Every structure is written in structure tokens, then in C-alpha cells.
Image 1: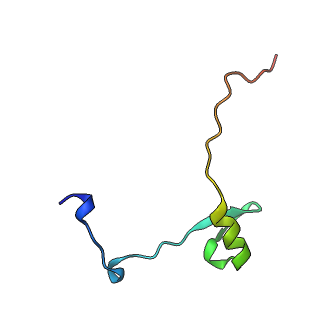
Image 2: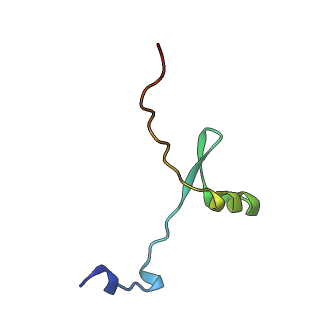
Image 3: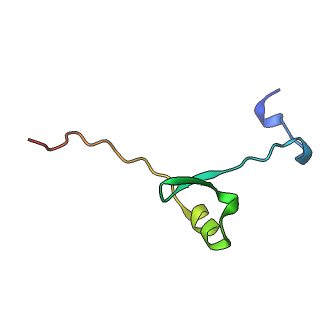
Length: 57
């Protein structure tokens, strides 16, 4: 059976709690107000490219 053929019913699923770092500490997103949840879901992930040299001399 391939992964494309796997179908789960809603009662078979496990709810996942999402946490994020806010102002230096971690909080569950479920505890956010409507506006803060909207800001959270609008965030974009990125990877900062590594610098070739630090430029220190």
C-alpha cells in the first residue's frame, strides 16, 4: 500500500498542538486571540544564507 492510498477517518486522527516562541518564551498558538492567530498564519519561513566570510580583520 502506497502513501497515496492511506485514508484516515476524522476519529482516527490525533490533534496536534502548535507552539511558537513569543517574546523569548514558548506559547501554544491555540491560546492566541483572533488577531494574533492571523499574524501567526501569515508568517513565512525562510533560511538565511550563510555568509562566505565574517569580514573581520
